[in-house]
Length: 250
Image (cartoon, rainbow, N blue to C red; front, side, top):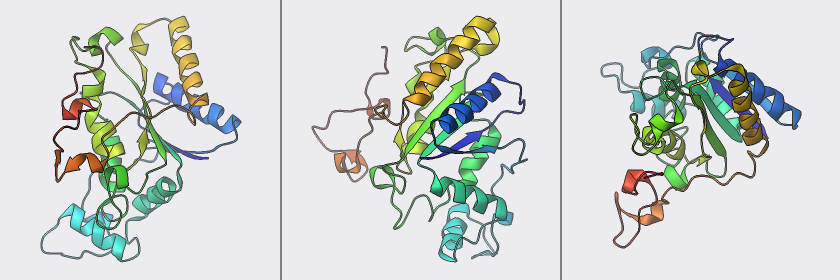
């Protein structure tokens, strides 16, 4: 299995760094081919702009999605850094997004990776498809992240709100959107606020998740067949918080 770990933390000695190193060691030791895109080490450009393309289809009015689709049609006419990441992504059987939760979302450099690398015409749209008919159907993806707050903060009645609500834009709006089977996230709650033994336990739990990554059942999302246009068909019960299911733990 080809694995791509997209890692977004500015400090290599961080707990996120330890999780990245563990994923490389464990998955590599299981015989998988593991690539790491260390976005800070790469000084990866987070902003999508005209420099992302060899040629502009419309130099008078810049529209990211239209230019991405046109670049794909021209034979992947993207900037070298995007093309390299696309090569890694398109070869991956498993994608792991490794990051600290900042302001209830991805660090800017990782959001920029998604903006630029999840390119229209390559990862979704047109003949490529989306959601349950997306390009990456049959492949797996997982969020592996740390939080500042503890687990109780991310309960359905917690201060930060239910975790499946917090992660909905990432797990549905990014990973499921392009067709991945999205595995339950691995969350290391508040590693900066616990002792060494607790951090070791978090890493042991993560190792167990990694060793089961090929057999872990994915999260459930509605297939496109459940929709009539852009709305759930009458009588289809909601499966996710996005379509009205109460948050887990409520």
